[in-house]
Image (tube, rainbow, N blue to C red):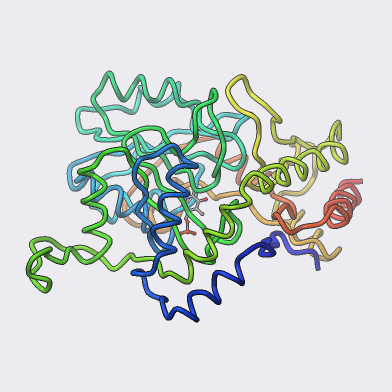
Length: 369
Ligand SMILES: *Cc1c(COP(=O)(O)O)cnc(C)c1O
């Protein structure tokens, strides 16, 4: 079976992990956590990095730091991972959805303005798969309506938008270091910001809001969202090779492009827009409407041929959990709905070989013929 993702752990990961054991620094107090915070902060063009235990809680932390809560609305794409909408709902705020663009699969900035109300507090811009959100119109809208911008950069470490670093946009950024992200710590995440006060607040909220002078006195409720030194050690080793990782991801993208380009039954990712070059977090394909089966069936047929493919995100407005809460009733976002039903992604992890890519593309062509 060709796995959909193989992480690449052949740098200093083992050495740094052993260092943690030998020095007995294994908790969040260890030195690798700060090294990862400053290193990943620099990669993202941010002054502060606050390491946390995963990318989902990074979103919870970002919303809490911005004091977004009951009565507030946050605009986000329907086509994303549940972590984004879940964090908004858990904060007591209301998620407000927009559809995505046909070609980049990212939130369509032209649809955001119509969703802004006097209750809107923030726009959550989530960079999807390989291309960033078209940020300028989002930033412009946010400025005009005095809204916060939360940037979810989980999928695009080291990406740029018009030459500016992804991860540096808006008031606060979140990242994930899950094993399929460009840089992994096994489980892990980070909140990034340039604002000193927001950063201090994130550090407090991450660590149970212990009082600085009287440790077990709490003025506010926080969480234990800390990252361990063990996780950070892996992340520091990964970060050393981010340039090579990005080259490899783009190489995988080119391999697939060469193998599948021009196929009459497939929509392939856009290699570049006028603001960014695809980073291929995952290599996704979309089945044309003339293919007589959907992504689910395609994934099953690929599996039978030994290829691990995965579904695209399922839109937020079609999630049973949100429907049961009375959210998004009767709302339709046709581009997201189609991507969910026709889209799948192929083995495209940093550790996947050229042979695996070739075999995966071949299997896909076979099930389509
Ligand atoms: C992976 C991901 C997350 C969640 O990160 P975890 O570390 O898995 O909790 C959040 N947002 C986006 C866009 C992601 O791709």
